[in-house]
Image (cartoon, rainbow, N blue to C red; front, top):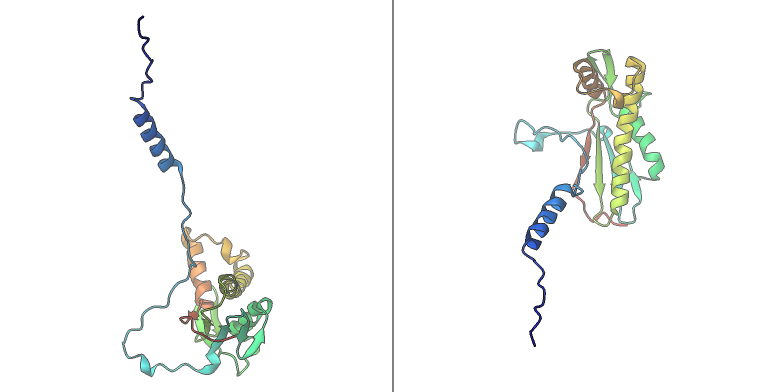
Length: 197
């Protein structure tokens, strides 16, 4: 009796197919990348002797966040919803309050001479136990305070919001620079500590 041969499956091209599938997934798959918080850091001081820098207390807006995610702003408990307006008032000092940063006249293109709180700084310090959500929310509120002021100024002067100005356009880039000169974002963030709860 003759033996029947078992048919074989040609697996010679399986390796090629697997390799092509791997290349396909590598090329077509996108990965999320962390974008971080866009923030321009202040320039390095020209001298190394930082001991002589004197900052007046009225120019610093202190925001502390404890491990229970509570805000202590200028020594007072504050809700997150109120932070933006408090920061805007600090940056503006609309009534020339002696407890808020001093107003100084500067000359800016498109605006002429304007009074600004040139030396103001918002100081932010978080506790190590602060939740990430609260940390981001506080950052957003502080950045939104600057953006609100910039938008209002841009609408008054140019009839267009600051966020709508095109940084690729040379003229609008000059407008952006002028607005940022009036309201420079000055948020100083200290390393997290155990502030307490």
